[in-house]
Length: 137
Picture: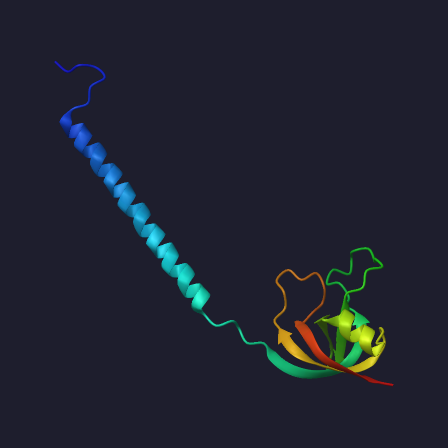
């Protein structure tokens, strides 16, 4: 007759086996995570392409034209080819202040082009980090 509250040797062996299996699985997952992290850190950063763009300094329009207009202005460059293409600009404050550039100015911007940001609320084909700007008057 079995007593209540006691575990048999067979049940203890099964329990120990399950615990060992769980620990081995966790250790394996930890090793995989460390290897994946090390590999992602060792990958070279994506190279941005450097380009020259001529266009007009504008406040970039929002994608959703149904949204109410605000006074906020995200500086960008409007390049007109077959259609208007907008680029978000970074380093604007230094470059714009130094060269007294304002919206409506016709400029040549040189800089590194980064791909568009996911879920960008503005019409933008990418972001140009300005390395130089030339104003045409």
